Length: 422
Image (cartoon, rainbow, N blue to C red; front, side):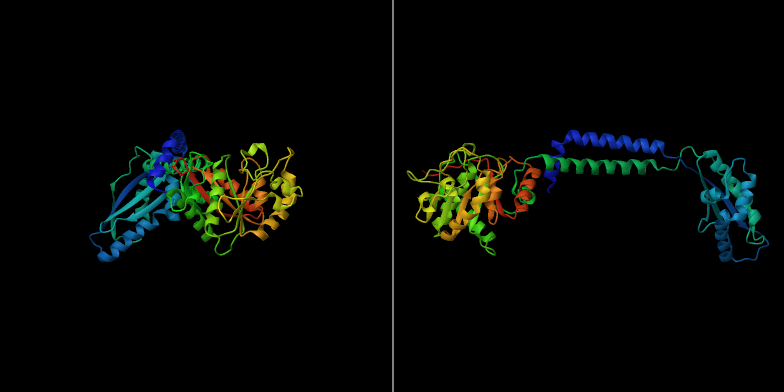
């Protein structure tokens, strides 16, 4: 995803972004305010070599390091606790007191953390006072408190700047993630990459929606309009090269005549290269739009499913190798059971006589006929630009695959109109 795509999603979901930033900021502020405050105070003890000391400088420095280490030893802590006017256990003192020698100096720093600033300073100064009583140098040092501890003006923990920084980073991550997720789930798709990802199938072609869906540009090989369907045919054949298909159900995710236009032109393009093709209008019923018209007094798919001979229902197509099976004279009753129980047998007859059977099926958002007709075969799915969300397309694709249908790919039907001959 490019930066401009992220920016677009953030702008479209700006209300959500602002809400998340505000809520996260408020939560971080409340957390910082409610967190226990810890105050840090430091006393500095100077451990100067005694005049009569014969200890080497290296050893004195080592002893200064030892002074820092024993600042929270049990013996020191017991002395400190006995002098305190506040109640602190030995374990509390051990966790709050730390000492260290300042490398290259004669100074030992005693640092204390406590939830009360005055107690922090008081404890640090007491440690500085009692530390000489536990001198590990046997008199090699002269001690003085060079910098007594003072009650700190503000707390050291939680770290306000760090908390604000982490909170701001978290708010941005949450806002961007939520905006992208909501935008992706709710926005209708208009790009091939999004469609391919949602359908988990390649976009085999991009076809401009026609001004007149009854036109057949594939009848005019060599034109730019026909070239689009030639490219679609080649992509379809390449996708099915490792496992050839004899049945392709062409449908869409939304109600539109463009699905019929797409399937009819694909059938013509296949016939133009010598394939023996049968184009079947599987849209039985008034709700599916204008049917393909066969020859005079010719039966159709509906009649074949009700026992009519297949030959009686076939009509010649507009090119030599193309035959058409219209939808037939629908009787008005529901066709779901008829398709579920008899379509597979009829398809077996058709597949035995033709190289490829192209079935024009009702859209997926209208009924399940397309899924049933494609069982044991494959499907080509027309996706109009900006008409379906990623969730909707993903759901349709999953339902198609759930019945064992092979989704060969999708065709992105763009909003741009094109001029076609005839």
